[in-house]
Length: 408
Image (cartoon, rainbow, N blue to C red):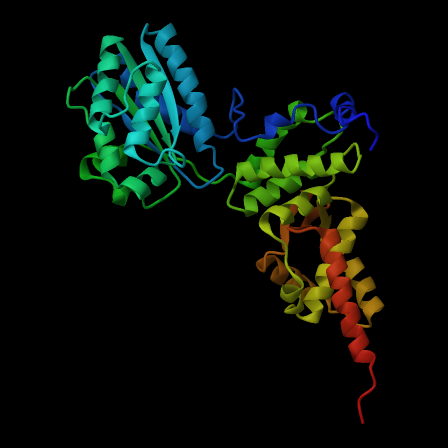
């Protein structure tokens, strides 16, 4: 390194990016103006909160959004809150404020209320006051300002874990009957209902918005929406998108994971100076996130399973694709068997081996319908290059042991 310092490093990255155009589009905080495959959930929220606009103050609305990680709960509520407050002021002439609180960070009733009053009135002194006093300040502020609040409590499970269900009850209690506060609770736990007080539970039982896991096809649509904005033209092709969507679907229909895979794969390609991302990049970074099978796990595989897995890995590397046809895998399987002196299985037994490896989580399959008929395509859930290296070492050592003469 010269004495000139490090300033030149920014020259290297700032002006001629081959992979990314705007990588922040792939981050969890980014919310596009349209969320594919979440029209139903958005419509449900509109229907639940219609009364808050048409009859403000008549009722304090409470809605629960539930579903596992990465299914769009936070993104939908963020987009809904933005649209809702604009509609409130533009069409209905109402002052509706939206505040979102992450309960992973604010885990007590006091800290939640502190965040609310700080957002509503930064100059309002609250130190030394009890949670109930601050709650009263919030309601008084809304009344004096003739405004209403849509409060989103994301990851509300953390608040209940730390402070009990009474925290939710105290927060939603409206002794003044002003109907000024409205609530969206976001939870990933199916058991949340059983932890709430009867009054809140009774309301939320009828006011639920369910977020099912995304399918691989739905995840593909989500990724395809982001690719043109996030990546340079030609940096990411359909094979790469399909690989990320498939792995996201296999991990619980997780859109966050699928987007992270695309981003990490892009960073890997960029670090290596390439101008395009490959399906192998996606498989490698998936292994970095989820972990990869170690040598001990692979040692437990029967020899035929190890040979079959190696054949699929090699065929995928050779093709440079996300998936290969069964025929391509079987052709490579015969080559691997010959290389290691192993008797190959018949087609039916080979196919059963593929299904067994799928059941163990190594492989995935999908049926492709073409004019000539149906073809089963095989994909891999881990780095093909990484598995190839380990499996070749294991099979080589096994072959060397078999070749050793018996000890007299």
